[in-house]
Image (cartoon, rainbow, N blue to C red; front, side):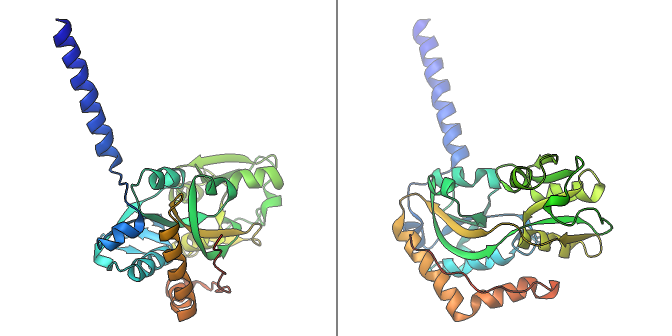
Length: 277
């Protein structure tokens, strides 16, 4: 009886281990090693128009996708051999650390706290935090106007909403959703008064709903978008930095931004300088 019981326990543990492995689906290879095999798994957002979007036909579009494809090409990987994996803000470090993605291009701001867990190539774009409101809203004009218990939405695992509360409007009520697209739906329905995140993200949503939404005020932070790679993978980080530099100097960087945002009135900024820390 005891032996059979022990066997059943051992079988259960083994099954659990297999299930965990299957769920993780990670790899110990570096991005460069996978690229040498001709394939890459790249993390992007699936719900950010103009940046990272899974389209109804199963294709992917946006500036982050353009950057990811350019980097992959410079590492020797063709577009058809890229697997794009959805990378919500709260899961990005885990996906990299577990080897479930080779690198992440997903409006991923470089911060000192994140650099403790992953390494960054880039930046490949610099933006700032802003606010998105309904087009008929005249009360919200900037972060300081979010008084009187107004409701402000952002996503879990990101810091913009807390930044507003800490620095500009202590009375604001913070609402957290899993994705920015859910925040935007809450904004449209009137469940929240404003959505905050990076200006370029909000402009993508505004362009997707012409006449319904608008970006207000000036940017009030500096966000350096980097490409996240596994901590200590200096070889891959160096190759990605080289690719970003080439994309900028060749004119492909500006062309990609014009393609994605040219019709929105967005003013294309000067390209950033890669930080090879």
